[in-house]
Image 1: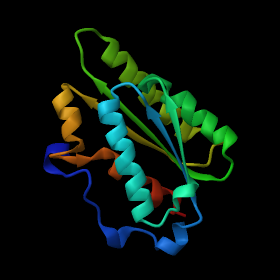
Image 2: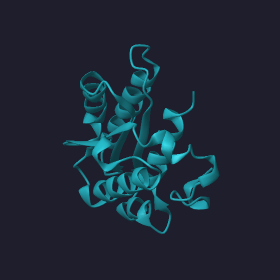
Image 3: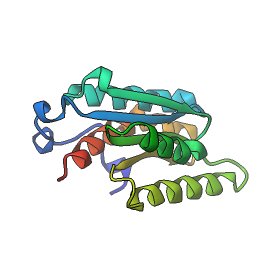
Amino acid sequence: MATKYHNLSDYDATAMPDKQDVQNQHYAIVVADWNEQVTFRLLDGAVDALIANGVKPENIVVKHVPGTFELTFGAKMILREQASVNAVIVIGCVVRGDTPHFDFVCDGVTQGITALNADEKYRVPIIFSVLTTNTMQQALDRAGGSLGNKGVEGAITAIRMANLF
């Protein structure tokens, strides 16, 4: 469903695992510093949602990478270095410009995160909270603006996927 019909911060609290089940779980967030006016708002939304749903603040690791393309490597390194992590959320924002760069970055990060999720050696869900928008206003609308916060959506997805089985 298109985001314009769904607030990214809305979720069914009854579908969430019990807070006691997640209080000792560990979550990692890899956030791109490019378009920080958007990505840092998404990061704040993700952290707040994790804590609101029972994750202890000290069990949240945040790593910064320069841009969205680098999220795949950042997530891979988290998976290698943080053995106890239950889920990884990748946060980025790519706004369409005048060149095909947008397409290459979006395709690259999508394929990279998909490959990590499909790799049998990594048994941790990697949640894709990357905005790919035509304008900066569309990104801001999805980073705590009129359409909610995709960081919140990523955190909720991470908790649910980490507790799927």
